[in-house]
Image (tube, rainbow, N blue to C red):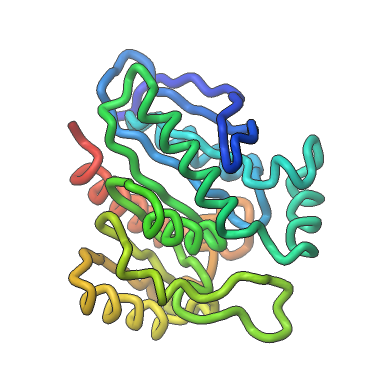
Length: 247
């Protein structure tokens, strides 16, 4: 069952006390519900990711999408902002943690919040979800095909960040990984490696690998979209967040 919702643009306090733009979607007629921070993919703070944010609200979650490119290209299109950020080597990890931390705090202060907050991210946002869950106190995290969690970017990549393997022992919450069997970044083998390392650190990890799917199988506006896989994967998301974010 879905609920009515309201969506609007808000300002939140992010890294270093900066005020950044965010997209808030609230379910109506409910209170004491879990919250979800949605971390956008490399293409940016776009309509497709705002639609995902509304989808969470329709399912009864408070949901917020921080614009991680707010400082880099204020007012620019998502494509232009993404191109600029890519040329700069990506958003620094410390800034990601600060901005996501601000979004978590915003949700926990919301009058309808039950104080439980999860994080979900897609593509680069999948990696940033794991990064956030290793640096912040959150209740659940979902990594949707996040590249470079277990491996550094290739030498010819424009990105400055590195593997998150050294900090996985700091994971603060249960983690769900959703991967495509045909993906190259990350490969299924890297997903298996992630599971082994988290098991060594006694962390709770659930993983699903989908045959016939590559990278970005959730992306409804891209050729990579796989509707049947996305339906299955959304089922896993609802089950996982239902277990860890309910009152």
